[in-house]
Length: 40
Length: 303
Image (cartoon, rainbow over the protein chains, first blue to last red):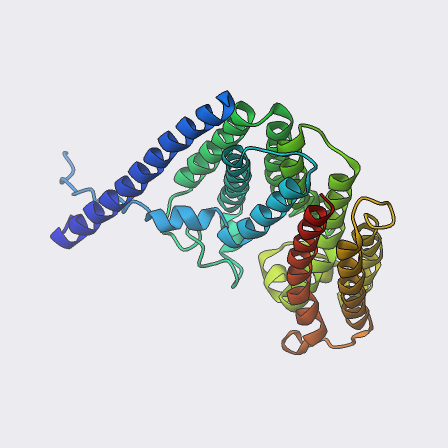
């Protein structure tokens, strides 16, 4: 694996991890909001 | 004799944008819009958060269908100009990732819909995903020129889902909306397939223009437009909508029928010169958006 290849590999991994984290955070907020809405 | 050590270079992981592309975002806009219209036109109040969740689940379910469709059709997509730059045929993603992504989205959207909204909406969402993937993509698309006719049902589910999410039941109006999209799909897709038929022929997809010829397809475009027109206008005389929808539907449907008649009467065989077909294809998209928009405005005025 060349250094450029490894750098690109890590960049993609980081980008995917960030998007996954944002989606999980949004789901936490959504599930909380759904719970409140269902209780009302 | 021991073989020399060969350094193994792992394949690059797919970009998140490629996963997003798997969900067919452009198709999703129409799905979201028609589901939202079904939800807003329903005679029931739904909590905005639950309404948002229902539309989100519908959109994610549609994304799952798109991803599984691309997973199954990667070989086919590689042969068509329109689709060869998709993540799988372009080699930017491995098939297993697409399969896992599609199944994950599909199961997640149905489970969330069932838990947060109601079982009827979740059941229709599950049926629409399975119908699109199994009946249309796997079974019909490569086997029969009627693939679009029956497959069109998959795209007709969203207003039913929106309505079921709001009311917990199915009434006559959402069934008519289902019929409208179901009958709109053949003229819409056959108009497209007329001016990209060489692409379909190269990929071996038995689309109607490839199998039955251009003349038959043009006639079928017009013939399917007639029941579609009836389904589009029907809610008004049946008293399910008011004049706002009725007049909009009458005018737009008359124009749609005129464009379909121009397609039926056209004798052009050069794909690059098929103006009536291109005009009908473009207008058919606008037609559905405006018609559903008018429905919501009309129902809100009535309410």
